[in-house]
Every structure is written in C-alpha cells, then in structure tokens.
Picture (tube, rainbow, N blue to C red):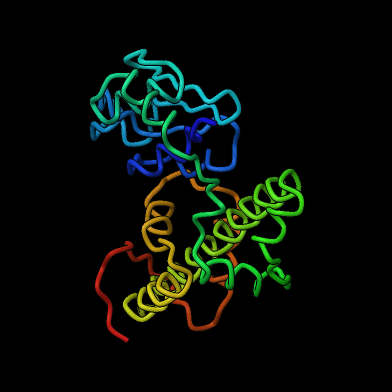
Amino acid sequence: MLPDIVGVAEQHGLLINPYSRSREEVTYKCPFCHEDSKPAKKRRYYLSLNSKDQVFKCWFCKESGGVLRFISLLEGVSEEQVRQRFRKRKIVHPAERLSRNKRRWLMLAIGGKEPNWAKMRERDFAYYKRSLDLLWQQWNEFLQREQQEAYFWLVIGIKSFKYQKYVEQIRQREREIESPLLEYALQIYSCSARPQWTEDAERFVHSLKFVSPEPVKAGMKMED
C-alpha cells in the first residue's frame, strides 16, 4: 500500500490552496520550480495532486508522476530508494496517527463513543479499515469546522479592535485539539477572493453592535 499523495504533501509542508482542500484535485505551491511563489503570482498554485489517482503535475514546469516519484523529488533521493523503503515499511492509515486527545475531541463534537479499535481489528479487519476511513473523514470535517470557527473569531478580533485577545483564544484551541488554526485563518483573510462561507461569517460579525466599521488589517497589534 502506497502513501496518500496529499498526505505526503502535508508532511513536507507544501503550501495548499485552501479553496481546493476538499476537492479530488488539490493544488499547492510547486516546490520544484517555485514559479508560483513569486510575488506577482501570489494567487497561483501550479502543482496539482490527484487524490484519487495518486498522481501529480506542475502546470508550469511540467514535473509529473506518481506518488513514489513525488517523494523522490521532494527528498532528493532515487525513486528506487523510495520504493525499497515502502516495501520494508508498514503503511499506517492516517487515522491511526490521530492522538487519543484528537479522537476525544472528535467524539465530543460528533456525540459518538470511540470503539475498541484493537478488538475491531482482530474481529473484522475489512470493517476496521472502513471504520478508519470514516474516522479520517470525520476528523477532516471536524478540522474544517474548527478552521472556519477560527476565522470567525479572527474577524471578530480584527473588527472589535481586540485582535490579541481573540488570537490567544484561537491559539488556546490549537493547543486543545493539537492542530493549526490561526495560520489557516490568516491565510484566508489575506486572500482577495474568499470562499462564500467567509462572506456569511463577516456579514454576521458586522451585525454585532460592538463591531467597529473601520477596516483593520490582520496582524496589526490592537489593545483590549
């Protein structure tokens, strides 16, 4: 079993296009040609990863291939070395890497009870794998909701001139669920073209009485 190509990109810290996160075709800044990292191309994401077919292609430099070639280019080793590595190594499902604390927060959010994974695996491995797939899907949906909520709190902090207070609130939540939230929220806020849900969030924030109508840039230090 080969690793998931999107998971590989995340492990290597590639910068994702947030609008493509839940799509089959996920786009990133290309780590090979760096063309889309130029200031004039801030909104460009040339590297495309197909999560279904496990292939990649940069639409600028034309680097392409499967997940093994992707890893070899990222790590500067031969494709054969990568192949040998995965022949010897047991591939772990991404859901199996979720900490107990992350699973606890997820179960609290969905109102579920965590099963006995060891017994499930022993009793019915196929069902165990399907359950892991579902768990991973639920975690990603949970994380997406958390990121959107972090954006909501960020906007409140900016518009109410209490930026530091709400940033600390977001960071506290990051520590609780052991996942980055603030960077995502700031990245979305800095985009000129934002997802529809951000417009709904900002419209709601503007309706609050304490919100100042004066625009303030994210990242400015404000006092309570």
